[in-house]
Length: 149
Image 1 (cartoon, rainbow, N blue to C red):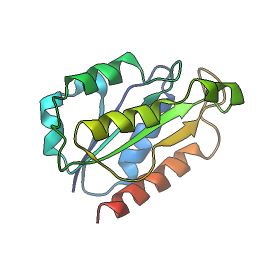
Image 2 (cartoon, rainbow, N blue to C red):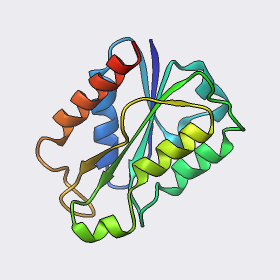
Image 3 (cartoon, rainbow, N blue to C red):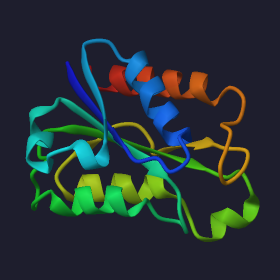
């Protein structure tokens, strides 16, 4: 299976999660920052996982820009999943999280959403990741892959 994990990261926490997800998946896997991805190549992957930090309830501009470049239903037939990094504070829920928005956009672009959009917690705005989150990300990735079979 050919997999692409696309991420954006501000303080390095989401990058660590993305690389952890990529390491947990067997087969041909690429882990790339959003700015390194050509949106026209997304369709060439069997599984596309997109994630970024939550900023004001939304994904970062780099993730939004990449997804905006994907035309119409170009992801038709591609399995997709989404994740984010987020603060555990209750007040953050008021604005929402990036992962469900990323998942919704991937689905609108024709992707087959597998698994639920997942959030991984950071201790503060700049991190670090909460203890155990990298392991949880690896388990989530393995479940996503199982869903494709």
